[in-house]
Structure formats: structure tokens, C-alpha cells
Length: 404
Image (cartoon, rainbow, N blue to C red):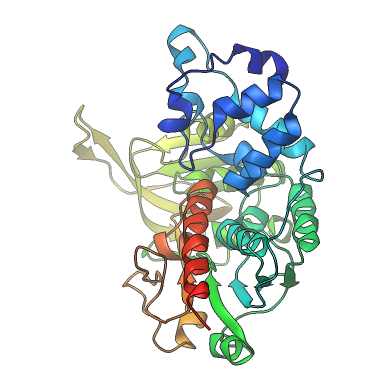
């Protein structure tokens, strides 16, 4: 795609719906395109990063059709401006050239637990504000779900490696393979002089279906499978239960790893994944079946009841239980947080879903500890995690300035 020609199509609307209604984090889209058209791409990149440190990832994996591009006025006349392509071109081409100026050192240490989009956003933001930031990451690479939950064909891992280098240039310390709640607890961080802690540990525990058969040897959870698909031998025929973006990722990955017949089974009549991901999944040769409710999983495959619906979406009839033959079954029905960190920290409240409870400023029930992202809201997406993290970083700064 010629991004220059796409940029020329932008009407520079006075009331840009792409930004005002379409972008969850309020990216200044017309300004970005104006600067790009004027040959000031570095200025555009600086603006994008300042507004959303995850811009380079969001340009690839956001649901643009429902967000910025879905609100472009040119939809009424044909096709919208391909805003995502322009944003990615700028963010990708100028990542290494960004000039990130830090405020004067404040002499205060900040800990960030988890390096997903929320953790990275807070780490960068607080480092730019002059704080000494250390990230504690339980895995060996940064990125969280961007590294271990989104396939490389959607978000190339090289981007995260480049991003890590940029963070190190900011003076951010990264401790990989370090689980808080294992050898180290949050109290240890406070004892060692950290003045505030941000929890961005995500949702890494698979949610069960609650049907018989989930422990069979050929049944897997998508959160586990996507972390290391090369460690699995799924066979030719794979059933994926669930129809969110992670289900689409698992199905497309299975096809790329050699499975020949992959089918997604959705309980409802519509996938919860974005339409773009559904389209790409079908293009990759995956079948999607709607109205199939799983009753049990056997070693020969899952057993479903097929529902039929009326125009209002009400179930009108159901079939007899039916086996869907499969060599392997992947369960993709959301995740919840692990509880090791919470169980080793006094005074840190969670709700009945295991999600960390926070107030409107992102403060937890334990003074000095803040949180945002999936560990607070449940699984969402990168741009919403970044938006919340930007807001919480500002409140952390306020809190720290009030401390001695």
C-alpha cells in the first residue's frame, strides 16, 4: 500500500471522528497525517509516542475497522483512509530516531511488575518523569501477551526487541525471569527503597470450561499453546472452542504449524473477535461453526449440542449431542490472573474474579501500590491497557510528589 497516497486522501476534518469517537486513546490522527504529508515524520512519531507509547504495536493489532478507520468520513463514499498503515509506517520507521528527553532525576525508585502493554507504558512514562524504574518480568522476554499471546505473524517479535533497546536507553532496568510472589515479595521491594509499585501482571491463568474431559492429554488451553506452539503436536484435525481473538490466533497458528483441518466452535451466532481477524482466519482455511455448545470433551474430540436460533437470537431447538472428531482440542474461553502475587501481599484486595481492585486513580487497597490493564479489567486489548496506564502513571507521579 502506498501510504503517501493514503495520507493525501485525508480530508483534515475539523471535527475528526476518527480521533474523537474512533480512537480509545485519542491519537491526534489529522495532525499525524498533516505532519507526515509535510515531511515532518519525526515530529509525527514523537507526538504518537508521547500520546501512546504502544503506538507501534497498536498500529498493527488494534481493531481499526471498528475504531479509527471505522469512523472516517470517507466510509460514506467508499473506503476509509488506511490510518493504521500510516501510523505503522511512522512509528516503525522512526522508533530508533525518537528523542526521549527525561526530566531531572527525582531520586525515587519505582517498581513495575509485569512488562505487558500496561507495565511498559507506566515504565516509560515514569522514566521520562525522572524516576528510577525497574521492571520485574517473570518470563525471559518483555511484552507480556504481546510477546507470548499474539502470534509473530500479527506482531513481529523484532519490534519488541527494538522497543526493549529504546527502554534501556531511557535507563529502565529489566529483571527477567523474576516472579514477584516467589523468592521476592512486594514487601521486599518496599523494604529495598522502592517508593511506589505498579502491578501490570496480566491474566495468565486459563479459564476452565467446566465440562468433563478438560484433563485429557490432547486438550490444551490457548494461553498455554500460544506461548510455545512448537512444543505441541496437535495432529491433522483440531477443534478450537471459543471465538475471540485468542481463538482466532490459536486456529491460525495451528494451521501454520501443520494441522490440516482446524475448526472454531462458537456457542453464539457471532464471534467476539474483530471482523478483520475473523476474515483472516477464514482466509487461512479455518472453518467457523456458530451455535455449537460444548457438553463434554473426549479423547476422540469434543461433544456439542447444536442450537438453532430465531431472528431475535433466541434458541428455538437443539440437536442431540454430537461428536466433533478431533486429534486435539484447544480451549479459548478467556483468562484470569494468577494469585501468587496477591497471596503473598497483605492488604491487597481482589474481587471474586481474582482481579485487583483499584479506585479511580488506579490505587489499590494497599498504599503505594497501583494497578491497571488486564489484571484490573480482565482480558481487553493493548490500546485500552495503554490508555489506563497513562492515566495511572500521572496519578502515581502525584502520589510520589506528596511523599517525603
